[in-house]
Length: 338
Image (tube, rainbow, N blue to C red; front, side, top):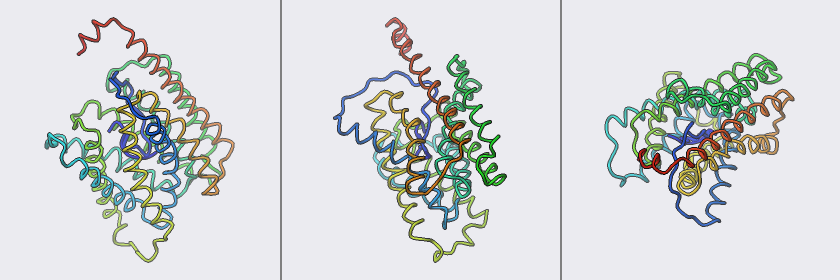
């Protein structure tokens, strides 16, 4: 998922988890075919981006690849929103740099490096821990108390991670274990960014907000690649057509098109319905990884994945039930909140 920024990607976020608490909103009507197509896009495209990352880093330097991806994708989104008013303030750009460092430099930087040592489907399963991580961080940083569903979900997610690490992540041993830890660190970084984005001032337009954060993240990733020495050792002749095609797919489909569909859905469908991509993306990643990537998961991966997906299910369903209770409150409470 990772994908574009959602709450800021739901950059995406790599696929991104929804905010811990989403306010009720008025939804506008949309053609069924458009909704079906948008859901198919975020399900299939974001589920396949993990294999795309793995293929891209076969011959492309990880940080350089990620930096170029988000410079281009962020630039496209900024160009699309060039007429949006009001324009971002200096403070909003500073916040975009901070969130871009969490969503892209840390998250995608760690994931793109780890993708060389792990099956793409396993990376996607670990990324799903963003949901319990966001629930825990929301409790600590936003003062949102954990419900019973939140506590149970966090415990299931933690159990899934322990199960994964107890099995050393994969058959390759310590290298794979370190790669799993790196992906988990990326999930934590994304979760922290998602929570902080609810406290920081950002532009109201979702596409502009994501474009700013993607572009800033792309700049930071490019700087990191220079400091790491990737740029100086780049050999254009060593880039395979397969890796270049994967990079183009990540830019055009994984970042631009999928995020456009995600933003469209958020305007026409309930947030908890859109959040179902968190369940579907790992299933797509496993299927695509086995079909196109020849990947094979170990039994411990399936056990860990079931626990993590159960964690996501419990937390999101608990949030949905909480929203229904909130929406059923007396009208005067809603009026007072406005």
